[in-house]
Image 1 (cartoon, rainbow, N blue to C red):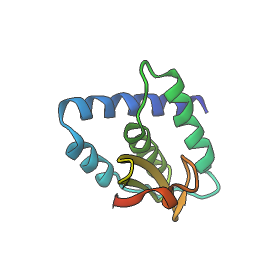
Image 2 (image 1 turned 90 degrees about the vertical axis):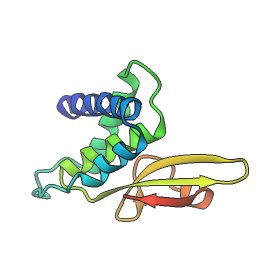
Image 3 (image 1 turned 135 degrees about the vertical axis):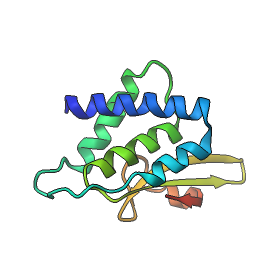
Length: 125
């Protein structure tokens, strides 16, 4: 678990700099460009373990982590270990709010399961 925690923390830091220096488009391209690595299903960590590692990395991060940074980190980490994860970005109009989360095979894995009832999906990558 320690390895996944450190890897998650470093990804959070990486996406922090990407968002600050190059903006959303670069972050989006990085997530879209991360391919799913082939992994033996019996040897890869569980989706829950990797999501828990990202959650813990957010606790130990030096500032508050927003949903886009957290979800981008989760997607990249999951794909590195063979999970076909998608970053979903949605919005609602009243009151206006946007949110990002992660789905694996159509199931939300890093947030509340009822988000699709609240937000209209704008993008998946």
